Length: 282
Image (tube, rainbow, N blue to C red):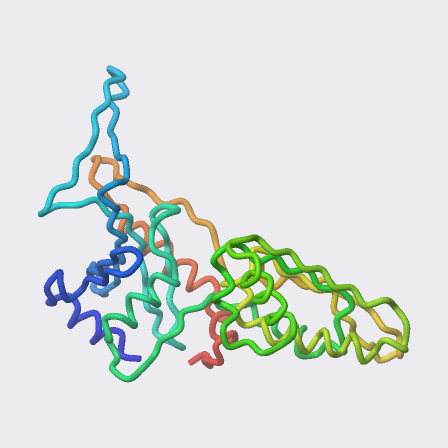
């Protein structure tokens, strides 16, 4: 995808042309940092949200009021890396736009006509490879939070079906499912079937599940079966970085710091990111 051209066009678009109003209102803007365009995606705070400011010296506080021409936003910084349609995203707060909000915004704006974009976390290739080489799964534990069943749409395995049925039957609930297959050669087919259902939901596990782990069974060269615990939601590629808000003179450098942090992490994990999306080094 030609993200550079898309950002260049976005930089000159009106606010209305950069805005998507769905369940929440999202607005995109372009920030140029170190001669490179990056995306800032904002979630417009609802007019009913109670916002206040306090003077720490006096203890006095006052409410902040939005008006027709100005509003308050939560912001995420997003960098488009030069390979594999990989992005780096840093949320400015817990309520700032997530990667799913980015997906909604991109598709509603139709930046790439006739193309439906999906944004999902990049899983560590090592975890994906373990799923591919396992002979079966002896135990799985999956916890799906409220409003997450939609992430399983399009998955046809029994695990996805069971989880969807539970939320369809009981509404907005948290669902935890544990399935364990007893030891014994006579249950090989059951372990293989459980692994097949696990592989079905693995690509969407980071979006759908608050927790997803499995004990996989491997046949070693000596004929002995061994098992390994694999985490499917905690091994997508993430990093923590401290981001400075102001420089030594008190000037705001949040955006600069966020972009530098994202690009630093991307460089640190470049080989792993490229391997995960099949983008060769070079």
